[in-house]
Image 1: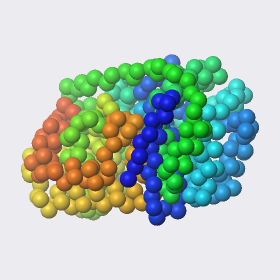
Image 2: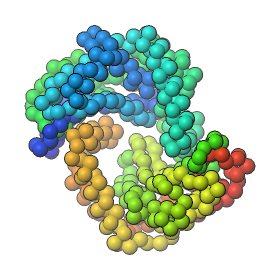
Image 3: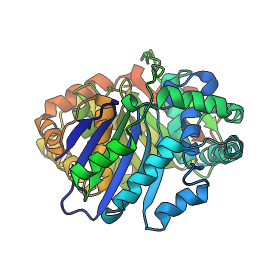
Image 4: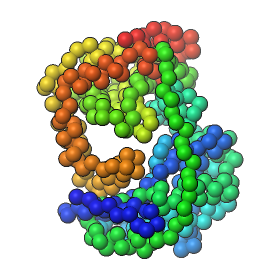
Length: 423
């Protein structure tokens, strides 16, 4: 279903033809992000991502860049995370040549103009302010900060306002040259494509490139002796919180059982916590549990927004369900439902060319190994009810519990909340 080609300069190309697709997606992934930064340049990966949309010799202005794909109804964007920076364009398959020309131009020929860098500082600072005013998003950042502290894994991807103001063209170019090399980059093209034709065109567009030895990311050392609580006092209409535990990285086979456990807890509208917290107690409109795994970190977290007065009760109900999963074996029926849900949602998402590109590309970049959906489904099907209990016993321990809260909650509430985090 896919083909992987390595060009002479070390660039990896993955092509995924989709016979019935009307769209085509080009996705470029670079193995860098905030985990590869130092304290004084935290946020530079994200800042650099913004600068790829500010002009090239061929397309001198932001307007020239945006009009290229806007004029054909294409979709395009970029993202920066802890370990990956990505750039993508999704178009009608008949416009694949335009998408390839556009994305190669911004990726290889961006000017990183000094005036544009100064102007973009204001944009990104407003992006910081937007997150600070969005507690539903910001509480996740606080949860990771609580887990990992003052190391790259605990820093915000967007960086600090102080750092953002300090970036100049020299710093941007230095970071670009040390991380954006062919050997650290993967290009994925999925959809209604001619595999051979696309690969040849990528080879032509990306034949050049420089060697670079990127900084290695700081290794995360997981260490926790007792439950931890972080409170960010803010006047809000709801109290938002993340309650979760340290788990496994991407290379741990237990992550498949963990994914199923997350579904059982709070992955959908028939999950245990959705029924318990929302339907039976009416405490939250939104409650969700997810599992996140990267190359050296992992966690399971439940997030919800509730009335301020219901924080302790909500935490207590979630802790009860964590303990229940740890102490009791689930039914075969509940496990099968979770398996079918996880496989079904994956299959539905892979109808889209952009999801296909991400599915294969992210595996290659982070894990250096690609499993097809069928191979992943086989691993999911192997999980037993005892596997779920073993994982629950491993992760649901008092010394692994963390609670991050945003709302008009006083710091004095911390000890009472900590008392609830006992398993």
